[in-house]
Picture (tube, each protein chain N blue to C red):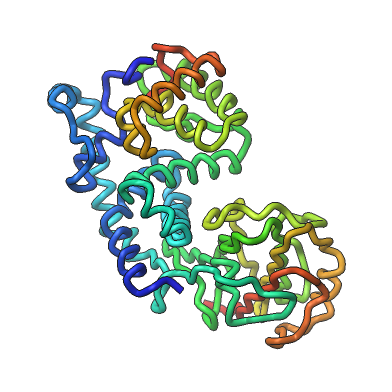
Length: 224
Length: 168
């Protein structure tokens, strides 16, 4: 096998010049010599440095890893069929994008029409996930798998569900309901239960499922 | 919850290498919003695999590898390979954009049939032009292992032994 597919430096090699010292293998003399004469690589290095400044100046201040209470908790035990409003972060991480700012959703925080939510499951013990939304108008829909009738495969921990969803203009109380389970669940029964529910669910009340970790993320959607 | 010392460790890594992860994600996804979200997701994953991550080489290499895998998954889920535009295939392009894009498309189609580790290996070498030594550093394996696996994969996928498959 040839060692490098092109004479130009890889992104990884350029990172050694941008992201600090102490790499296992520093740039070779040949690579440094190439960098001195190659306009393309010089331009790519300048772009990488510009993006480092962009990250430090714009992205770093706007992204919080876990809000004021630190990073998202690591899941330790599943929840079984009962509603634990305070523990939903053991199963899901919810990120909110508002304008250019992306931050983890903090319980009790009001959301706005136009906010976009991205869901990241963090429940490695389970195999399937069903995620539903009961919107402010009382309508229930399956968000994952999108418009599905049964649970979908649970992605690896930390991998977001495909896409994100935007909040509509109807104001009021809404809730995301996630069910992580070993066997796929039928959505119809749970949708019917949620349609009958009021705008909020009481902690400790039972859900019509067995053998599933059930979490509810409740939020109020208000005008900005 | 993470122990306080683990939390401090992750926050430090985030400040040190968040830029590296951001560039990696932006390079592959070519979308600033998606790249920002991906940075968070990569670090959330890192937090969830802290013990494992600390045993497989330098965190910087682990983050580089995890970010690449994560973004390849996002790219795969975003839309079918054949609908990806030039910029989604590691733009900007070089001297022969049509040829490079076609080469990358063919490569991406082949990647669908590989394991995550095999896909990463092929992507880093053939699409990103990384040396075997660099790949060994990222994967925390020996260069000999990389050489052997790349040889096997090249034969299996009928990839060009010394050709160019869209190094941007």
